[in-house]
Length: 95
Image (cartoon, rainbow, N blue to C red):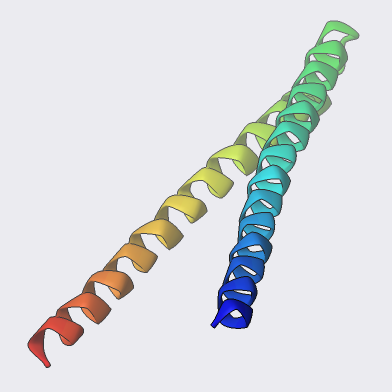
């Protein structure tokens, strides 16, 4: 019995490490995306300041467009996941 308890505790600790690692990776990815978008926008502003308004505007639009598209994609995936989980829960309840 003690061996099963130790194995269960070990498995729980591994799962906790995986979850914490995933959270840290997502947070780090968000920071890097913010920095990259900020640098791109600032470069666009610099290009506009230097008289290259077309290139600067393109840099700003593409960086903002990328952020917006990632936001909407993630929201759509979250909605789809919620619907799938609700359907799975409903099918379990009906059985």
